[in-house]
Length: 492
Image (cartoon, rainbow, N blue to C red; front, top):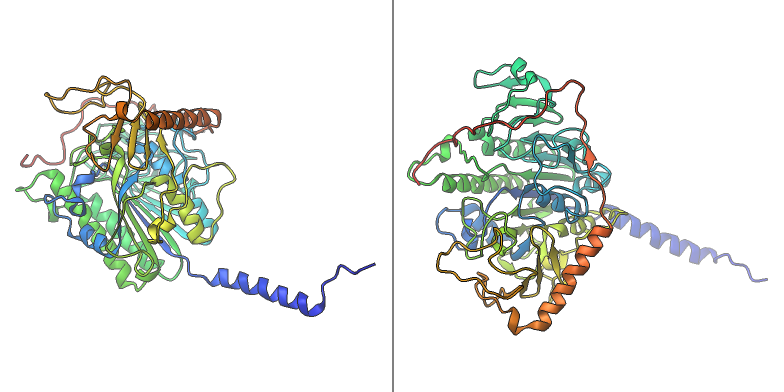
């Protein structure tokens, strides 16, 4: 009988190869990751997409040093759905998430879902979230239950209010003449929101005029502290969501408030990149800049519509990828990519493992790294948000009639198409002005089938949200009445 044992020299050789491979993988540099997610910034709000007002010199420089993505989509045209897609690589409907959560919502992102932070922390990254979370404001849905070592920020949109069920820190700073007792009794006011540290309220109401500056300072502090170990910094800014506010350094009465707020966000990005370079870690740091949805106040031009719409102005975002020596400088990628792709891309870059549960994103590193002839991994990128849409190559398809609902155009002379569906050539017609569905029935049929299949698959495979925990006896999180005025009235 022949022995199944390997000859000693061959066995030693194979073991050496395996060990060398493992050591090489362990020694391979894994990038630090900084993910900057702006709130309500439009495609046309930045210089690298053609804006002349406001001025965004730091973002424009980041574009010159990195790659601009012209056709980058988010997973929802409003807040919570978009953040769900970014953090999990899943369409928000798969996870049963509401498009927008409120302080009186009782459910949030389920902690059983694997977030980007979960994945990176499991591979040894230090993780921090600074800014707007908006995936659940009570346990077990806060960032510290979702893979982040620590959290500091406003837990939802800055036009909301406080839930008295939130735990109050012993060192809480209470402002505007309020008291801790009033907080515990259920004080609320629209645009009067808390700042949380981990799972406790540390400031109420938040001083929103300083929020962009303080987010930036805390981000720079984290970068400095963790410069010698792999880290993940998630920086979802509160601005430029209404109510707009800026620090004194950007309070220019000769400009619109939205312009000032965008320019302060641009300053913040510049400070973050400056700190990365000063720490000597630029060549090992990936920075991603994008927005959660289209403009609410600013500009989504030349795209059609704004926040809330599934026309491109609501879901196609100003996006930059920056990693000196790894991502080409001054390059432009016009392939379709999406926020759901961030999670699987970083899994491969950072040595993580994909969740066992299904996700929807694809690895877009070939696009980011400028690989020759790299193409979008999405034959059809489908969104169920609102009345739904599909992007495939140059085509954008809508399985509904133009002019219905809130998806119409702000043009009194505009006459919507009477075709039952819509199809636009986004290369020849970036503003989606001319419905060409009747001229391309084969494209319509293909994309309608893709949409129908996507909807059926999602509905058959949804997963639950989590019930948030309210301490016994907490006052209800009542929606407040009249809003407070915006931070400052400036020249319109």
